[in-house]
Image (cartoon, rainbow, N blue to C red; front, side, top):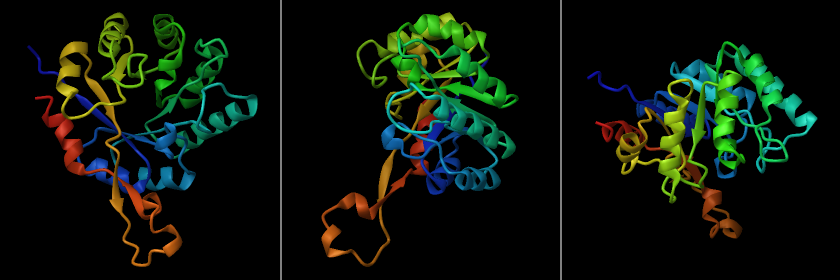
Length: 247
């Protein structure tokens, strides 16, 4: 039997965390800002710098704000322009997600973003987990040429009851027509179980951590606000552990 090839995608929040993820052996980077809000589009300069510095697959998220996935015409115009900028910068793909008011996939505008992105790949992010009819959405995303779906099985995390079963069913119905990629709560201690129970081969994790600021001066008024003096961090060894635990 041919050995499965696993892909590890890491969500990063800036240049430093991207560098750490690459050092740890990430196959693909989902480059974001504001991961605490689920990720928004990074700055042009950050995307450019990461593209120039790292050879691995780079997929910036295209999301103009946090909150829901119902976008105005102006917000869609921003997303469209960001997709085009990512293509100009030589990114390998983008990560998008749009819903209608009734919880269905915004097929028409998602298709426009996919067309604008070509030949870049397109991942539909966890807006999928907020959609009303996941199996209908699956077929729609296949029809318009989406490359993969990032999902936690219509639950907040892959560890929630029923999530693994939903992911497995999505992957079965996808039948190699689109990639189903589990994400949200994927860690070294559960990735092997997820691979075995879902038969998925791509996995997404943020591995979010913090590192203490190197500032020597701490303003007295802010000394008790730890978040003001800590930075986002990813440990390269944590990235490596994801792959190692799949074997």
